[in-house]
Image 1 (tube, rainbow, N blue to C red):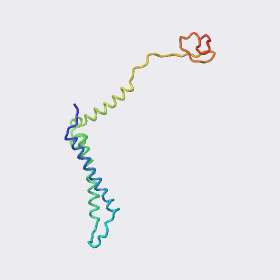
Image 2: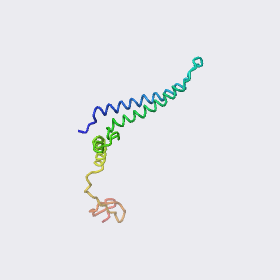
Image 3: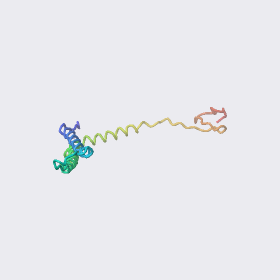
Length: 145
């Protein structure tokens, strides 16, 4: 069957975890700025290097985590880490089958047996009511068709 390996699943979730750590690291700058460093003048404290490190470090972790997730989801060849079209086709097979399955399901929903019972209606010359094609008299007014 076309299953995704446990290694790829692990890479996907680890990549997601790395991204979360990166976002938290990046957002911690805003919490630090909002809280204020307090009175650090006695220690001659400069918070800028820490802010820059956390901000850039968080961004780098978000990018790396996203790439690890992509490799986990699409495989090494499917994500472009390895340039091998045949392996890429194999790596992406579960997703292609899923997309094809969804398209097939949608087409099956649309494709129904055609209605072979065509009903032709004719209008009564007197009252203009619709009647079946083989009616001899109008069902509304009783006039001869």
